[in-house]
Amino acid sequence: MQWCFMLISRILLLRRNEIFLFVTEVRKPCLKGLRSSVATAAGVDVPDKMKSRIPVVLLACGSFNPITNMHLRLFEVARDHLHQTGMYQVIGGIISPVSDNYRKKDLAPAHHRVAMVRLALQTSDWIRADPWESEQAQWMETVKVLRHHHKELLRPLSQEEGPDQGRAVSPVPAAVPELKLLCGADVLKTFQTPDLWKDEHIQEIVEKFGLVCVSRAGHDPQGCISGSPILQRYQHNIHLVREPVRNEISATYVRRALGQGQSVKYLLPDAVISYIKHHNLYSRDDSWNGSSTRTNEGETS
Image 1 (cartoon, rainbow, N blue to C red):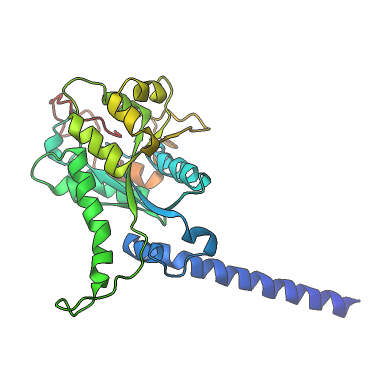
Image 2 (image 1 turned 60 degrees about the horizontal axis):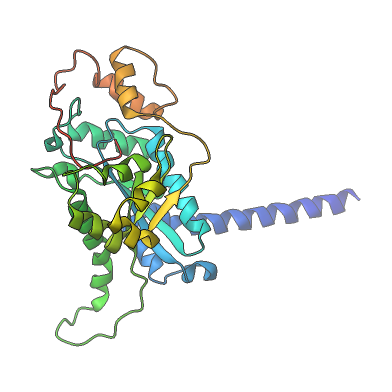
């Protein structure tokens, strides 16, 4: 009887090892970065049930001043929602902090905000920080940031044309990833603010790219859509996501609390809190504290 029990235990251990090896192999492409994920979406080693889904990359633009747990939560909730539709497979996420030329009050220098985003994403295997927007000499409109990243996503696919550029090469069947703007419902509401967004930019965002909007207390995203002819026309490309757990962490509140010497633990990742303390950011005596009150396109602040 004891011999039989030992045999069963070894069999179970073997099965557990096989499962572990399988999970490890599945996760490897995620750890190699977003471009390898695009290649995976093009038909390399994708489970059968995912092959018919449209690959999607989520892009969030904003100050991230500083990045909070709410920003990270937006990505997770949005990914769950898109997967549950049965139409999409989220293959990556991008966080793009604005440049210093946004000139918003209390905006920390871009290199600090990018560094904090990278620290916050240390535990994520599918979201990455991108410094391109933050390094631009002038403030970039959201639609221009979307165009840039869409072009970057298409680059790996265009490289598959082959070395003989003068010879016609049979195209490789590939699923072109869609890039969608991820935001909170407060950003969707800013589309109604006069002279804040250009109509042609709003149309390009919702028609060419698409919008994934996560609910926030006190906002009526469906009402915003109903009140805009452009949003109504392309509402099939606007995904309204309900956040099941109320999450009202505000970067504005975080900055205020830090300025008053209050605790922000559990509102931000611990690595970000340590970075803020080390560089003395958002304190009353910080040397970079600006005074501009510039208001531009809505953002995930």
